[in-house]
Length: 129
Image: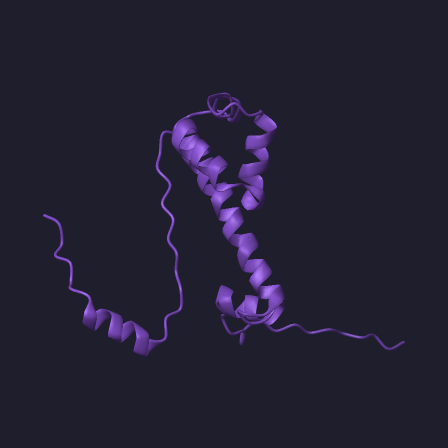
């Protein structure tokens, strides 16, 4: 009887970054699959940040929901999947419910020549004391 033997070696494995794995599995940034993944990850992060803030305040989902006139199940849904939340609801949760502030950054790709000309024409702001 012949036995088949499988040998697995782990010694020469190359470490890869999370971005490299995402490139391999979902494609590079700019492909529909990858862009969809990135949007879902950002939405997931919103939910996690809301949950973390609520827990730091030792607040239950029920208490947060009551502060913004929503149901506990709605807060649970937002914390587990923040993808279908309006800006108005986000502001309500953070500002009315948690007593915090929302900070939003908008990042755009500016060609280097436009960026350099913008920088040359705009005065530099002095840091506030």
